[in-house]
Structure formats: structure tokens, C-alpha cells
Image (cartoon, rainbow, N blue to C red):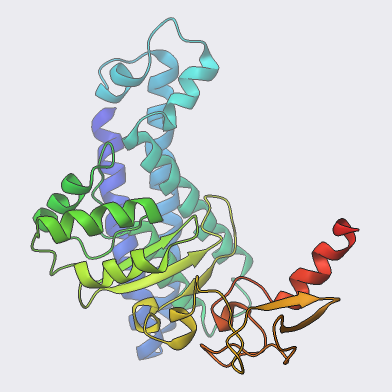
Length: 303
């Protein structure tokens, strides 16, 4: 049975590749038979991944220790519910679970749109199949900046996703002990605010690599906001003003909010920043939020 499961996964991968090629070629050649065959290939992917998942879950529930995954992630004393959750308890099983979820989503999309949106459905099938096949992923059991850079160099990694603390760590490691990371094209980062100095160090450590800021990057979030080209924004006046106190463009005094009005606390001139000439210090002016909005927000609590 273990061989059948492995064969099902390999066939599913082959069908996913065919779905990409068949859908795009069918659209470009205006061949409806190729388009439909690409959609049918997605159904085949779902069936094969479901078969492989069912074999693994059955082996876990029955304690079939011929499967190395079962031997590593379960035992006879475990309750049935824990044996079932062992499906995603290990790396291989977790990837199989996510493959099953992605193939299910893809099949549902095709079923619900089989009579509508026909003009762009071939591209939808191609994109979903590309996401499912996912190229090749390489994983570390635990984060270590040196090991991460060694892996990027050895496996010729093109994209690596990090949080700010990880980005800061690999910056310093690369600057101290450079590796050949010329294959790296994109570093998406998110999950927490990122210091401007960390981004500048990343640009220095990985010249030519694009930086992509992701907002809303959680496992279950259906929406994420992307800011590409961060490395090109680091020399703009708005970014250089980040973290610096706003000073009056007239006398250099501190700018603050009194009575809901933004003005210089020394000469009373309307608040205009000497760094970026902005009158509102929102994200576009290098701050966190407009001072007036901030003042209005805290005024009731101050009373």
C-alpha cells in the first residue's frame, strides 16, 4: 500500500504539470479540448492526492508500521483521534495535508465555474496547478542564520520568506561571512514591524535582491497586502524621516498638537515638517499616523 500512495503522489504531480501546460496552450491556441483536459487533470490531481491521504490515514489508524511515517509519528497506545491528527504531525504528512486542501480548493473552483468565467478559467487552472506543484521547497528543522545561508547557497534557493528578526540575523551573518547567494531573487518579509536600518542592511547584504513587505501574512488570512520594491524606497525623504522628531520648517521648534491643531510649539506656525515638508505625518510622510488623528484619539482619555 505504501507504494501505491507514493505512486499516487507522483502521478498527481505529473497531472498538475499537464494541467498548467494544457490550460495555457489551449487558451493560446484557442483549443477547447486542451482547456477541458487541463480542468479534468485537476480533478485527477484531487483524486490521487485524496487516495494517498486515505492510505496514510488508514495506516495511522490501524497501526501499519510498515510505513516509516507511521512508526515515527504514532504508537499503539495513542487514542484514535491523536492517530488521525498525526496525519499532519510530521513534515511529510503536513505537506500532504496542505496538498490535499489545495487540490480540493482547485477542484471546487473549477466545478463552481464550469459554465461561467470561461475566458480566464484556463489561467485560473494554470495558477492553481502551479501553486499546488510548488516547484521545490527546502526546509530547515530549526532556524539558524548560518545554516539558512548555507542552504540557500547549496540548493540555489530563489525565494525565502522571513520575519524581521530572521532578516536581521541573516543580514549580519551574510555581511560577516559571505556566501554565494546569487540565486536569491526575492525576500518577502512580514509578521511584525521591520526597522528601516534592518532593511538597509538587507540591501547591503543582498544587493540586487527584491524586498517584498507582506501585511496580513497569517496562516488563515484570506487577504494580504503586498508592498513590492521596498529596497527602492529606502532613500526617499519620507523614509529618511522615520524615527526623527518632527521639527518646524520655520524656526526648527518641535511640532505638536494642542487643542486638536497641529502647529509649532515654539512659534505657533502651522505644522510643516522640515524634513519632508509634509503637513500630515501619515505613512506617506514617514510616521505611523497623522498627529491630528492621534491627538483627537487621545484627547477624551486625557480628560
